[in-house]
Image (cartoon, rainbow, N blue to C red; front, side, top):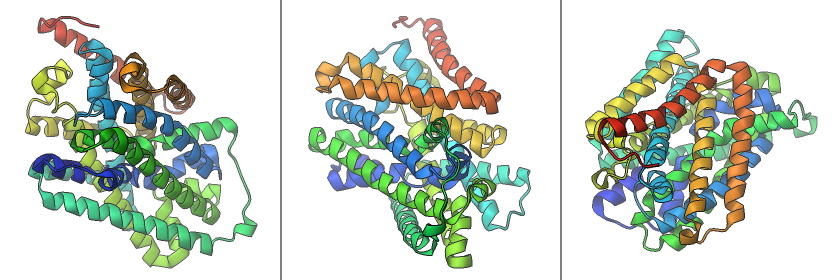
Length: 435
């Protein structure tokens, strides 16, 4: 998730145009989950991973519609945290949802950190022990938290350049992969309807970054026109890239190889195309993508309520405790991400991240129905967003219950605990217990 444009515009009071907002969306979605989760998705989708990406994009398109309408009507750097308050009011529901959104960002950050450590180990020949891999993941989290404290424009420009390198590397990989693959000998394998749906749910995390564009809506001159165009343009361009990359990959590697190289599939596929050079270039692109996404996700998580703390419309719990100061917010965010890295493996944290955001998008869009007359949104896209997100959530959650019950229970505890914590904190502080 690339937040450099947003930070720079906010700092200098500059407006963000259509091109910049589209670039922000592409940076928010491009790369990190793609590098880390192809192997996990192939377990369920077989060679139909490109179709799973298309289904994920189709599902995301309805949420993009909802968020674009909300962002244009309620422009704010608070983004989705603002939408919940506008839809549900400043009570326990919006506060609990915002806490859960905060946790969702931290889970996504843990995915990116785990992906970074996995590719680091791959580039080093796979010689790191499991403990050393975890240490690498924790170290990059600490580094990104420190970078966010600096908040310099240099860091922002470096992040933008990193995403540019990643995008070019992936496009070259797709083109050369298609040229090198023996497409005539390709055979479809695996991928039941239910399996493809599960894979679409797993890969959904690759699209969650579209929400960052709404945080720039208050810096746009014409958000009603520019925000929807930017969000849909970014979604279309990123989807094309994902389908091209995943198609080249399934042509190059068998389903067994996809699963064996889980966590670093693209680097091994690139090695088939260009040898050691391809392996290193894609490995480096993966490190940059994961680090850039981790850096910006920690920024988003620790500042999810910064726009609204002064108006007391944010979660009382977050605004008056965890996010009260930047240092406290970053420290708490980094600590929780490190704990998640230490406890959960890459595949599990990826599934948890997708589950969390599928639920968040469904909840935010349901709240949108309450303010639909203000936003001018049509009902049917909103109901489609809710139904599709909940379907993918249910399908993936049932699979996680069978394969990793502990992570499913952890996610439910996070959801229930978010609302319980908000409710108890409001009651303890004597705040009116609004619903």
